[in-house]
Image (cartoon, rainbow, N blue to C red; front, side):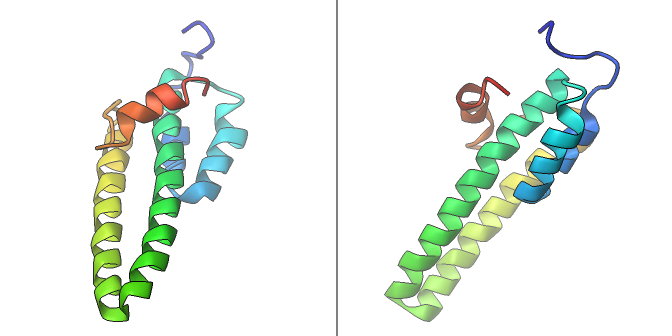
Length: 117
C-alpha cells in the first residue's frame, strides 16, 4: 500500500464517484490521480462496477421488459431501479461515514475486478 497517500483520507473522491459515471470520471482524474488513498480506491472500484452494472441492467431490462408489455415491463423495471438505488444508497452512506463497507452484490467483486485502481 505504499502507493497510497496518507495526507488525505480520500473521502471526497470516493463520495463524488457515486454521482453518475461523469462524477466518477471527475473524481478519478481531478482528485484521485493527484492523491491516491486506500479509501478513495476502495470506493472508486465499487462505484465503477456499480455504474457499469446499473447501465447494463437498466438498458437491457428496459429493452426486454418493454417488449413483453408496457405496463408489466415498466413495473419490473421500476423494481429493478429501486433495488439499484438501495444498493447505491448503502454504498454512499458508507462513503459519507468514511467506511470501507461493500455495496451488496457489487462491492466484493469490484475489489477483485478493478484491483488496479
